[in-house]
Image 1 (cartoon, rainbow, N blue to C red):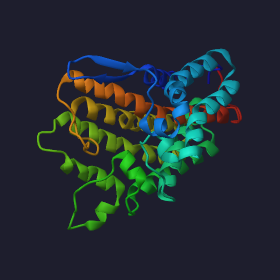
Image 2: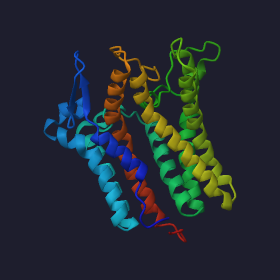
Image 3: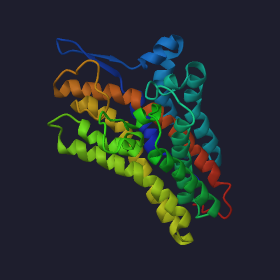
Length: 319
């Protein structure tokens, strides 16, 4: 576990999302740029802080890199937690979950939404810590606990909640032979293949189903960590973390791809988008600005938690 190693992927994603301007194209084909336009939810609720919120992701990414290069890892861990959690916590306390997530998550319905969000967070922190330190048994229990929470949420019959919409696990299908399938999240996800319009390209079916397989696989891999031999725990933990990263990356990119190519991998837009490659790229760039930060900022804070936890592990590996 190196003393100085910034979370490059998360930091670069935040910087890109923060420096991209809001793009608008008029009927004459001319572009208008606005580097300080935040999400409308934030702009309406906090007009005096709108510009600061718009540039915060880029500043957070730069700070994460700087702290990782300059500070000892344990000090950088506290900095990552503070920088990653500051804006989401502030917005959540002031305007609720919907504002903190910039509209990605309309709300949280206990207990099931708490189960999936807590399970994802625990799995991320525990698998990352175990992979970077040592296969300590209590860490393996934490990994398995996170995986068990996610797996329970995926397969337990229950009503549809906010996190189902966030993860795309909803469908218009109504299986009359086995109606309980519509109450199982992972089953709704696979049934959604039938919701895609005729003519949808094979690539998008493949994208959606790889996402579903990874979503179902990472909790199973997390459970495998607990029953694996000690010298194999790091291997299974890294696989679980990789599958979780695949889910998170796909989750961020699906709205961007939908806007770029008008592919219905999400709820249909109220106004059909204009045709054309340039218009699609403009919509995709604008979507990056509002989709990446609400997910990457909490991941930055969780990375700090993982680094901090790594220093509590007896006999940890250090670079």
